Amino acid sequence: MTNKIRAATRTHRGWAISVLQEVHAIHECEDHGWARDRADPHARDHAVDIARQHPPVGLSPDAAVAEVQEVLNSIGDTCPECPPQ
Image (cartoon, rainbow, N blue to C red; front, top):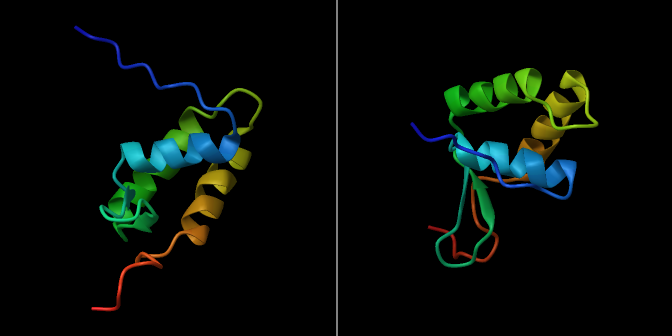
Protein backbone atom coordinates (compact mmCIF):
# COMPACT_ATOMS: atom_id res chain seq x y z
CA MET A 1 0.00 0.00 0.00
CA THR A 2 1.32 3.41 -0.90
CA ASN A 3 0.61 6.67 0.83
CA LYS A 4 -0.11 9.59 -1.45
CA ILE A 5 1.48 12.71 -0.05
CA ARG A 6 0.47 16.08 -1.45
CA ALA A 7 3.36 18.29 -2.44
CA ALA A 8 4.00 21.24 -0.18
CA THR A 9 2.64 24.50 -1.53
CA ARG A 10 3.78 27.96 -0.59
CA THR A 11 0.47 29.82 -0.77
CA HIS A 12 -3.15 29.09 -0.01
CA ARG A 13 -3.97 29.86 -3.65
CA GLY A 14 -1.37 27.29 -4.73
CA TRP A 15 -2.96 24.76 -2.40
CA ALA A 16 -6.41 25.45 -3.88
CA ILE A 17 -5.09 25.06 -7.43
CA SER A 18 -3.47 21.74 -6.55
CA VAL A 19 -6.72 20.46 -5.02
CA LEU A 20 -8.68 21.54 -8.11
CA GLN A 21 -6.16 19.82 -10.39
CA GLU A 22 -6.19 16.68 -8.27
CA VAL A 23 -9.97 16.26 -8.63
CA HIS A 24 -9.87 17.27 -12.32
CA ALA A 25 -11.97 20.40 -11.83
CA ILE A 26 -9.37 22.38 -13.79
CA HIS A 27 -6.69 21.48 -16.31
CA GLU A 28 -3.99 23.23 -18.28
CA CYS A 29 -4.23 24.29 -21.90
CA GLU A 30 -1.90 21.89 -23.71
CA ASP A 31 -0.45 24.64 -25.89
CA HIS A 32 -0.11 27.60 -23.53
CA GLY A 33 -0.33 26.31 -19.95
CA TRP A 34 -3.27 28.47 -18.84
CA ALA A 35 -5.59 26.88 -16.29
CA ARG A 36 -9.02 26.07 -17.70
CA ASP A 37 -12.21 25.24 -15.84
CA ARG A 38 -13.64 21.84 -16.84
CA ALA A 39 -17.15 22.92 -15.68
CA ASP A 40 -17.67 19.59 -13.93
CA PRO A 41 -20.04 20.12 -10.98
CA HIS A 42 -19.07 16.81 -9.36
CA ALA A 43 -15.37 17.70 -9.44
CA ARG A 44 -16.14 21.14 -8.00
CA ASP A 45 -18.17 19.59 -5.18
CA HIS A 46 -15.36 17.13 -4.48
CA ALA A 47 -12.83 19.98 -4.27
CA VAL A 48 -15.08 21.84 -1.83
CA ASP A 49 -15.45 18.67 0.28
CA ILE A 50 -11.66 18.27 0.42
CA ALA A 51 -11.24 21.92 1.39
CA ARG A 52 -13.82 21.59 4.15
CA GLN A 53 -12.46 18.30 5.53
CA HIS A 54 -8.71 18.84 5.03
CA PRO A 55 -7.88 22.56 5.03
CA PRO A 56 -4.20 23.50 4.93
CA VAL A 57 -2.49 24.56 8.10
CA GLY A 58 -3.46 28.10 8.99
CA LEU A 59 -6.85 28.12 7.26
CA SER A 60 -10.23 27.35 8.74
CA PRO A 61 -12.50 25.00 6.77
CA ASP A 62 -14.67 27.96 5.70
CA ALA A 63 -11.64 29.95 4.56
CA ALA A 64 -10.32 26.93 2.63
CA VAL A 65 -13.66 26.55 0.83
CA ALA A 66 -13.62 30.28 0.05
CA GLU A 67 -10.10 29.98 -1.39
CA VAL A 68 -11.15 27.10 -3.67
CA GLN A 69 -14.21 29.04 -4.83
CA GLU A 70 -12.15 32.19 -5.41
CA VAL A 71 -9.73 30.27 -7.63
CA LEU A 72 -12.63 28.70 -9.56
CA ASN A 73 -14.18 32.13 -10.08
CA SER A 74 -10.89 33.46 -11.47
CA ILE A 75 -10.46 30.72 -14.11
CA GLY A 76 -12.36 30.64 -17.38
CA ASP A 77 -13.21 27.67 -19.55
CA THR A 78 -11.14 28.91 -22.50
CA CYS A 79 -7.49 29.73 -22.93
CA PRO A 80 -6.96 33.46 -23.59
CA GLU A 81 -4.20 32.66 -26.12
CA CYS A 82 -6.07 30.03 -28.18
CA PRO A 83 -8.01 31.28 -31.21
CA PRO A 84 -11.81 31.11 -30.93
CA GLN A 85 -13.26 27.90 -32.30
